[in-house]
Length: 164
Image (cartoon, rainbow, N blue to C red; front, side, top):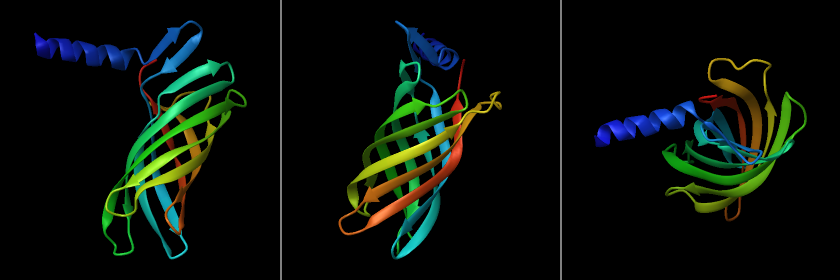
């Protein structure tokens, strides 16, 4: 019985990712996937990140989206380490095809710098038709402030929306 309930709930969540609530629209099953180019004054590293990006429309042209992600970076010793990204972004819809997002939060670099403030800006392009589960393409920039150094992260990736 318990297993059937869990399967039913997961199916319900996946098939109803958009919920209307008093003229507000919530897109729960929204994600981004992107390679990351991280630049510092002493070098660079390339890797990838996967973010959970649910969206809540405040007005017709304004929304906010928490951006919670997991990625991998490479340090100076050429050791990979995990990072957690946690930010809140505000988005402005410029047209049916374009929007801008900006905001901030933190990145947690395990065993490589700890908890650091992060500020991001993204440019999003929505194609006329969704391509399978891909509903947007984006270019993003994040600056992460470590103790005495800044890391500049550049992302070019895709947005994934499951359900309606």
